[in-house]
Amino acid sequence: MEKVMCDMEIVSVIKDAFQEYEGEHSLVLFSRGCNYNCPTCHNRNFINNKPIGTAIELINELITPIHTAVVFLGGEPTIHGEKLIEAIKHAKGLGLKTKVFTNGSWYGFMKELIMIVDSISIDLKALHDTTVEKITGIYQEEYADCIITLAREARLHEVNIELRTTNLSVLPNKELERIKIIIPDGIKHIIQREIQ
Image (cartoon, rainbow, N blue to C red; front, side, top):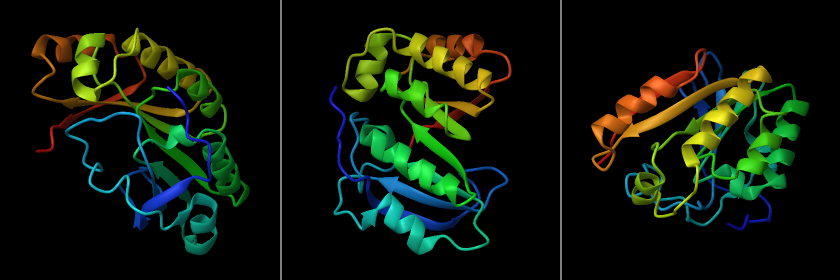
């Protein structure tokens, strides 16, 4: 998989959000593009829209004194690589907390990300690589093991970590029950309903 290396293009924003980062008044930025093709993605209708600006431009333009955080969603923010890191550092330089929602697919980059972000929400789509492929359209070896390892590393670095699993029709009940069992202690696990 090849990362997109350009300015971090943003296709939509929520200027005042309170749900995406618990306890924080957040500016939410939706990045352009994704490396997966999940049919149930609730953002798939706009992730490839024309950009409205770059992350840093929009942070500078939209942050007010009452904001306490910037949240990066997608699409998939991590496909923007170092541009995401730059945007996070910029937000932190303004005294803001940062959170990233990610599918966790860029394992090497994720290890760098957890060193600077305050909070991270990672998809744990399935346990079996073949189920992950049915959900995302991409085969990834040892997908679940990598996500669980990232979650443990994030916790070691005192990053607020949550894992999210969507209860999809293609995700067998036994697999969902097994996911619940393997989540390490101290890591929040959210089970979301499938969006039709």
